[in-house]
Each structure stands twice: as C-alpha cells, then as structure tokens.
Length: 414
Image (cartoon, rainbow, N blue to C red; front, side, top):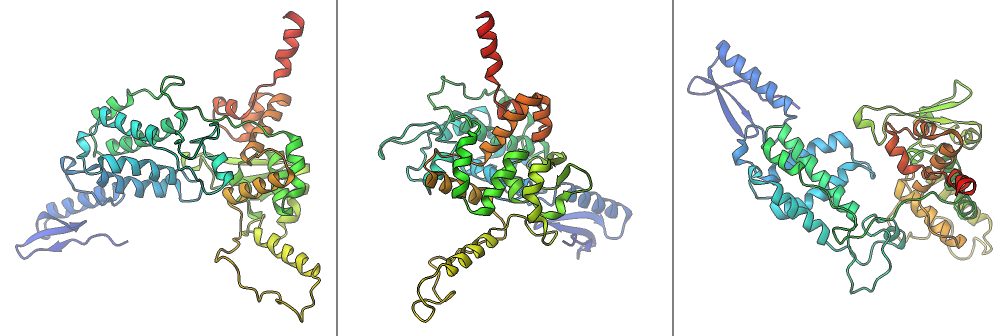
C-alpha cells in the first residue's frame, strides 16, 4: 500500500492526508515540514495503519477501538477454523451490543462486570447443528439433558475465558494510547467467577479415551481417518496438526523423524513446535509422503474417490440402465476439500463411534491419552516435551495422574 504523499496546499503550507484527516506541516519544502511529515508517517506506520489514527482518545468509542483491534488480531492469530481470532470476534460482539457507542474512556470495572453478567445469562441455543456439536460445546458440557423449554446455561469456565478476551482487548487499547491505563488496572482487579459461587455449571473435563473404545471405532472409520487416529494416538499431536500435515514438514534424516510446524497454536508467541515420529508412527505416515511436497498428507478427496470406485465396482445394475457414474446431480453444493479440518475430522470420528455403538469421543482426547501414557512411563517432563508445552502446569491438564501408585501406597500403609 502506498504511503500518503507530501503535498503543497494553495496557502503555501505542506500537507498530508491520513484516514481522511488533513495535517498541515509548515511551509512547503522547509526542513521543518519534511521532519514533521517523516515523524507523522513513522507514527502512522507504527500504529499499523489504524483507521482511528489521529483521533483524540476522548473522541473514541468502544466500537471504533474494536475495528483496529480486530485488524491486529486477524494478522496476529490468523483466520483458520481453530483460530483465537474467531473466539475474540464473538466475545467482542457481546461487548459491542452493550457498549459499542460508549466513549472508551468511560468503560471501567462496573461495565466489565455488566458484560460478565450478559455472558452468564446468555442462554445456549437448544438445537445445536448436530448431536456431536452439542456434546462438544464447552459452554454446555457436563449438563444433563433438559426439556426444550428449559434454557441451558453457559459454563463458568466459558464465561471466564470470554472475559479474559475482553480484558486483552482493553490491554491492547491501553498500550496503543486509546484507553486509560488506570481503567485497565481497575478491571484487572475484578476476580473471575469461582466454582460453586456463581450459579453456573462446571464444564466437563476432557479425559483420555480408552484404548478399547478407539479400537472398536477404527474399523468403522474411512481408511484415511483411521490412519490419522492411529498416528495421532502415537505422537500425541493436536487435531489441527495432524490435519495440516504436509510431506515438506517431515525431516527423515535421522532414525526418529522430526516434523517442524511453522503454523501452530503457539506460533504467535514465537515458539517452535516439533513432533517426533517413532517407528510405529513412521510406518503409518510413510505411504502418505509419496506425493507433492506441499500437498496435504491426509487428503479426504482421495478417500472419497476410492469410496466411489469401490461402489462402482460393486454395482449390480448394468450401465445401460439407471444413472451412469457422474450423471447424478449432487444433493448439495458442498465439495470435498484437499484436507480435513479439526471439525470434519471430529465429525468422522463421531459417526464412526456411533456406528460402532461406543460412547462418543473427540480427537483431542487422543492427545490426553498419549500424555497420560507418556507421563506414566517416563514422567511429567517427558510428557511436557512430547506435547510441546512450555509450562508443566499445562501438561498437568492433559496428563491424568497415574492412580496405581496411590493404590499401592494405600495397600501398604492404609
């Protein structure tokens, strides 16, 4: 994008226009006007070309700050289906509905609490897109089935996480000089909702999935999805990481392969993420590496093509009767993509589990299972390295404690 130019006004003054606002810099051609132009452009670029650049903080509304923040968050977090950016957009939607027109300098801890009450009282839609979506929704996880007339409440953890996103928005606004830092400090003093003290349900914990459940599900999955499950269970990666895997990411120079990810959950923190692939996982992955370096390893279009070929081979009706291959109009405009998304991957597993007659489970539980197994056999630090966590506290959430040690202690001294 071109920078606004240094121009001459009919009055003889130098001027520049930024976001529709004209700035007069002094006599045209003078050193002072050139320095003023360079200083103004430097500040404009440092702001990230914000639309509200030059607007006095006293004149800014909350919704105006949101526009600049969302532009920054989109670039910072990315826009994939599992991006934090999409969660931020929804959190700010509630904030805008309540205080979009409010001058940003007037927003404080009282308004912050009002947003929290709005999130807590917001009912969950009774009919989610699917049964799987209903089970996976962290806002209603762990709640028992209720009648259609009885609203479902958001979980305490959900409300607290949304408030943290709003707090991050105001922290960014304060760092950009758009929001009083004293107001931000007062908002930080507002404690999160406590368990058993707020009348909201607790979110259901994500537990490891039993090996027997996984083994019962695998025969009912498409072959590619079955290999994704086997691979993820062995290496303990995230669902988004197995979905986005490409041959170009795999370094096979050593006995243990290394998968270096450029785009991952904590990439915006400047952290590296490497997945280590042992012999068993290598055997699963190897056939999917025999393709273009920048294509996706687990391509759902290949599975769909094989399914159609098998269906055509098993056809009983002669080709001279009925529909020929490709002549039947599709019931939907949706097309098979070149890679699975975390949501389509989870849906395939959900359908397989239902067909197998086992309890519903999600692909992220495979990561919990891998973490628990590694922690049990090699310790918590090994689980931390395998999962790619920077803090042991995060690993504690994924790796369930081994109860066998406590049982043995109880037998001996209890």
